[in-house]
Image 1 (cartoon, one colour):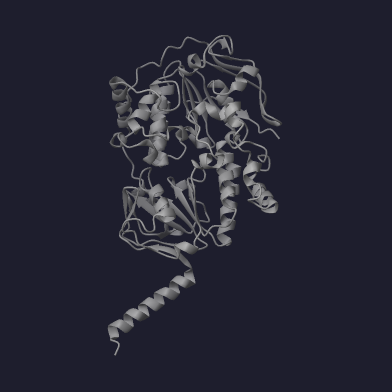
Image 2 (tube, helix red, strand yellow):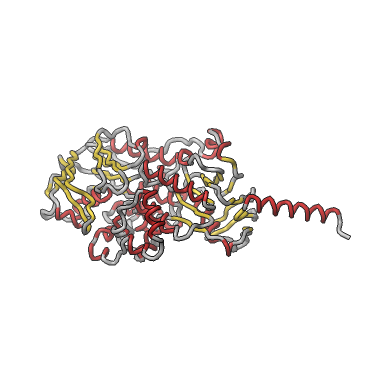
Length: 495
């Protein structure tokens, strides 16, 4: 005879089963601890993911968002993880910016390779990658939705960071996944592209996909988001309806913190021995029949503060590659750097030593065994990567910069194991450590949480307000332009 307790338990199980089926729950993380690659997350609320819904997984840089994404994608049967759902029947796809290397089939060992003809001969075009993978009708529809109609003949290395991010999304949609995870989907996108991406993501939730967006700023949560899953200090909070989130909720998740300590910099930047930092006289850049820049004129005097603006694909990063002596096509153009005509005997290292530079894709070129402290100290050198070993004095200064940004506890962590936001803050410290007379900051706040954005903005304002400092600042968010900026250069996308 079946006991009343057993009947009650069976009834509860059956009821729960049909509730799950009615909601179409794709997975439920049951275990109180979830582990992946040596990191442990606490899961006191047993979160679930439901089909057709959009989730904002939100928290500070380093809180555990990327780890959770890896657990959902790959960590079902690792250690003591218990995740219920039919893993064999689910398609789970995770978009990370580093997927550019898997697309090209090549890991460039140094930063300048992305512009060198001999290296790029082997890099596929967008058309070659999507050939026979995406039906032309679906490709044309997606490109139209995301304004990518003109990239079919471009090599992957020549896509802007925004174009690449959108292409990565399309590339994954050779089939519609059950769960799509996107890490900071809006970074690198101009305003129209952000709106188009929202329309695209909303449409695929209607097709049955659960969309998980890893975010570090509440302002990025789209209106169509259904649920918010907060993460703090490697602990997954209770899922809450997006409509129920308020300022108190986000203030607890992103508590206000004191300003950082005094930065370890001299009162003046390195020697400024020039009147004109940059003078472009009708610059042109093209790759085959694809025109990136056409007849660009621009003069930047020493001490000026500029914002360089333009839509995705308008050529901002390409223009900066000319200035930073990365792009071989600089020799085909007429321009002046630091009062000297380009190509009159100066080396690329003569140019680079005067420039502090950060770009959206720079983190891809530190994918080695170096720790964070070594990466930051490498800013004293003029190449991108850890090819030289810093001395003790350089490491000591690098540690002071880590303390300035409150990340000294990560000094010994291997760079590739850091979250994208932690990598970003390290590369910002790396850029500022050289104290260069010209700062080129290409989307410096890319992927930073609210607190870290404030810290970096304060650092930029403090540094560039010193007499003689020259700044070129790239962003797609008007509210991120430093108050010290007084001039704007806007590029138009070539059609």
